[in-house]
Length: 190
Ligand code: AMP
Ligand code: ZN
Image 1 (spheres, rainbow, N blue to C red):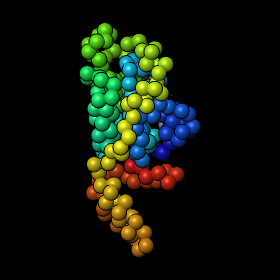
Image 2 (image 1 turned 60 degrees about the vertical axis):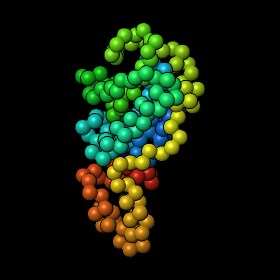
Image 3 (image 1 turned 90 degrees about the horizontal axis):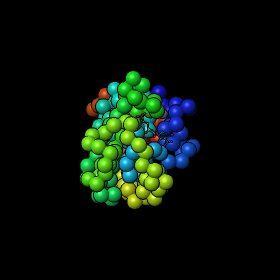
Image 4 (image 1 turned 120 degrees about the vertical axis):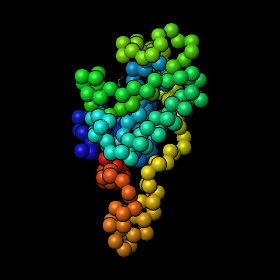
């Protein structure tokens, strides 16, 4: 499974439809939810099309959650969030509407009055919705978050070994279960 032609989030990854992007690297992209329940409500998704969390390889999932952490921290620092909810609906029975794995990072503010915890029925914050791109500009993560897995080892060996016999060496350099592949030249793990 690479990208799904009908998937709205794959279209965002491929820049076929616009989004208020706040972070992007070769494996993960984060953008603001088009219907924010709170100012800065972000989604973090893997660039590989999988429907649910259990379908993603361990290293890709680890990196996805490292990005979730940075997004959450950044929302506190740039928008003044006092806390956040991390939510992921997996499967329609669990309330998943978009069938491309996504992690909601929902900033929470001490002065809001919607209630403790998170309810899917919380109303959209219309003001935040109207200022999506303005908020994204403020909440942008400008540095690249390095994957904790050995992407760098891999990149190094692939450059060196291309002259010899790169691919075998690459496999050995990655002591993990995820399968590495390239999608239109973009390195991905699944
Ligand atoms: P879920 O119910 O967990 O599948 O949530 C899907 C989320 O994706 C909802 O909160 C939607 O508002 C959001 N969403 C749907 N389409 C877009 C889009 N084009 N850009 C940003 N967020 C979107
Ligand atoms: Zn997709």
